[in-house]
Image 1 (cartoon, rainbow, N blue to C red):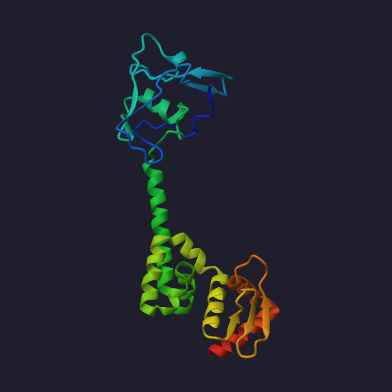
Image 2: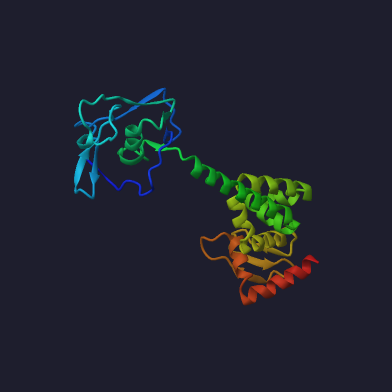
Length: 254
């Protein structure tokens, strides 16, 4: 079966290239199809010409297309060793076969692009720096709210130094999630709810269906079915009625 795809539109650059197997596979050797066979087809559908073209790797040819190869061809196996294959810039036939036309490209193997990898690494580093800077600037209450998502109620027993330490570790290990949590209003409101419960200002009944004022048992809200009670109460605090409850709880903290 022919691979139907367009070759890359980028200008072809003559350079050394390295290819690696996908999925962190590192067998001692892996042989890739290097010529067309009924059991292992090696064809490429040329949309401009409107038909499938047979491919093969010949070390004495400039093109991987059989219809462009001239004279006697010296065929060669394509072998990955320890999960990698380095191809010198002088072997343009193999490079073009692997980089542009082979049906196993981005299925069994991929071309290592150092420039793209550097860009990805730079983005990761910049994201980590942003997360660490945010962690350094967070006030204790906000930091506790973010950390509670990861560590649960144990945060209540931590010192401010322990919270700061674990917050920085969290920011370093998963900067994207950390930044999302910092910018999520519900995280702070949920922490506010948990702290109000721990301070016996409000309480959640045993069925975890209703919140009440602790001092007079007056019901504040009913938790919608199948929702986390603390998340539901956090959402309730954003309503007109809930905003008044928020102010009342805040006064009791003081």
